[in-house]
Length: 361
Ligand SMILES: [Zn+2]
Ligand SMILES: [Zn+2]
Image (cartoon, rainbow, N blue to C red; front, side, top):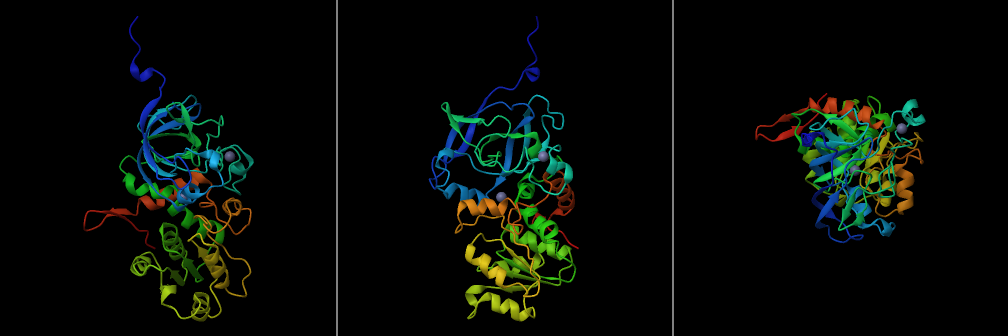
């Protein structure tokens, strides 16, 4: 009998390198890890690009989940499907994908209703294992290595549920598009889905990192008339302007509280404020910067909140506070796809041949 074609054989374990955190706050160590084959409805992805999100740093530093170490962090990634598990029809080997850390099963009541992005089957994973069987797909010398948000992209290969991946075009620059997994969609979703910023309104953004700059872009696209960016890094002034910020405030250069300045230049406070730093003090400042008249404001709590307890962090990012914006509040796969479509037309090479990403109104 002829030997079986290698491509028809079921995938086997892969040995590759991954950055493993052996304990909270401990330096990541490049280890040879074994990555198990994808289980039913899972795909194994060769990671091409991954970015570091503050949420990774928060979880890495936290001592609240000691039993989840050793662990592979990373949850914003782009990559190529290396193999598919039983039952997967949406993806084929060679597809280019984005990972999403809040999946979409398309059948639970939240996925069906469209009122929440917290899928009951593939929602935010907090136990360091895969949703389907509560086991890990990583090991080092036989010792289980836990996942982070069921993505774990700080590895050359990772396994994700097919409901936690979105197909992207083959020509897309992978090192840019990975930001759509979390940072960019968090900012845009906070503006469009949670706050629902309206035309002509005023907005304050605390922290102009990826999330904050995306908030600025989203507010600009919604037609906000005043977009105030607050950051202690003076370099963010020019950067913020190019993303839609109309007024820049560096709190370090003020002799009075920043909320006073914001209230003065907006005749009593902004309509919406977004906290994109992850600091409880800044949350308070953001609240105090809002108009006294409007009682409901939206806050982007997506990024880590270093000075708030881990449990409160999860309350916030689970949207239970009503004010929190978990990642993006998108119905993840469908909306990531639509944001992707919107953004992808905006990726172009600049005069230096570097891909830039700017959505213009
Ligand atoms: Zn993130
Ligand atoms: Zn679901």
